[in-house]
Image (cartoon, rainbow, N blue to C red; front, top):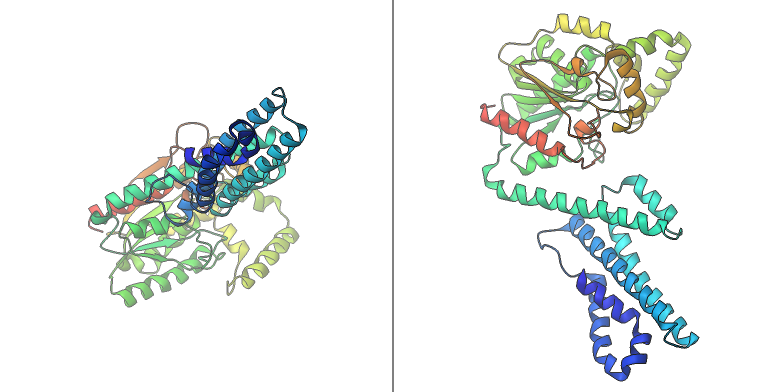
Length: 435
């Protein structure tokens, strides 16, 4: 950053420097301009292990930090030219050249982080664009953008170093492959992974990963039937014998039904449920009781029509929602005792305030809390507990971990909680158990 900032400053203030040093300054200006041009293509500094998107984030941060440093110095130079008696023409010319040079550095940097950073999200990209023309506020927001991008680069660099150091260990190379089973109202889409960055992290550490591929909205029994087909296909095509299921939300109920009722216990070595409503969501009972037949039919019809266009052969919104009620889950639990020989465990999380989760979880958090207390924005902590063990994740502070955070839905790096590493540990534990 320092080299780029110095070169930008020397080039930007060429007029002022010439007025003091004369032709001698050419010996400094020409190399500075050349180095600045090179830096705009590939900024100096940074660890060489950064590749692709992470390299662009690092380079963008370097350029923006250089822009701020050179900009502050240039403002001081411009202010100093006035009492020194420099002519108006010289001041304006110096300011014009400086503006052009600094603009080149700024736009190069901002474009890099806007096109490569995940952590900026839509929110900070919009804030940056809106506040970019407001004096003082624009600098405050720019510093925030730099901080977010810098932290992202540092975090991802640590991930690269960690995975490189343990690559030979293949700590996620389990005996049986991992089957990730999604929850309600989602599908396993080709261009948007329900599980965020988790599958790639598991594969980097040796895991073989498959997906449930069930419809987005069906009854537990019908989803389980689809899941059974997927499990049998994986076992047949790979010859793996069994799978280790990690299932989120309603996917945990679907998996339990397939194991207990459809004979999949012979194909499943372990089941780990993630934020699954094993005892239902009482606010779902409340909403269904308050909604009239007409409203239920209207909402269900709209969802089913949209789901069909996205690939669901025969979606059933009402059946899916009904099976998430406390009454339905009580029946499911009675009909689906844990199968012998299948390791069953559960993990979960909770929010600590409405703002812990993004829309609409920030709204449903209050509703779920009214009926059941501590929750992740949808499911109560008590409802998540199932199997031989239960682990709850809640980092220090007031951020909390939402229903979506537990599957990296928003691809957000949360202080004190590395969701990718959570799954690496879960799978490595299965490997240690011989699964």
